[in-house]
Image (tube, rainbow, N blue to C red; front, side, top):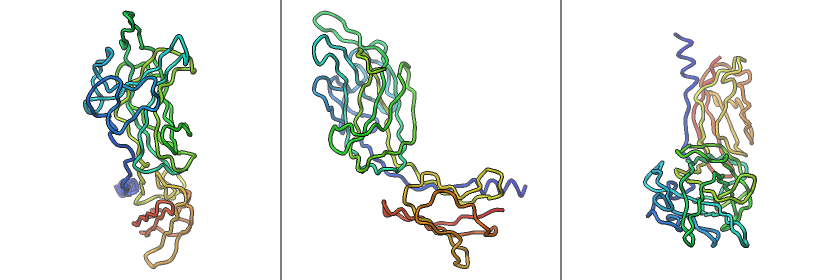
Length: 280
């Protein structure tokens, strides 16, 4: 029973708050063709995204809220020979190079999408992908942040991944409809329940450096670059100190007990303080 209690204690965590970077993440607005909802804007003028459902044969209910976005690629007989719809949003805070962010989105495909053109019905129902770029200015696709697989599912599938941008000061996200292999095609992708947040900082309240390969280090999930860490004992002695913590402190020769940490990120100017127990 004692070992079980210690294990449960060692597996508890403190989770800090996170910054919400995107407005209108579920694309709520009046469902209408050729116009995205509030906070989202087309970059290209040739063809613009639709606020779905109920346009061009799309009937799938929203995954979150009432409406969502549909973007398409279209093959044309004359220049520019193809159209790839896109849209952008300005982030509430710029993304910082090397910081971990969680990107999540629900995606689907409409196999009955199409429209009439001079009394000819044109299908726009091939599966395509969603490509997400970051930019320092409006509509710039300067860094590829994430790309979905080919989406051929007609029901919503939710994706979530941690990304770390290489560029600094990315203030805009740009969504681009992308055909497989960059071939021109008449395709569509439906987008809902999108989110981009700083990865939450999860700080353990205890760890067990006993060499069993499980919970051996003071591992802080979501730690940001240039985060200094100082750990002191109850007597005020410094047990560990570094200017750029790499999740590598295993307690050293310090005995079991309660210690006090101060974690500071110099880029964000934030500090977290708390207790952590070493259990040996």
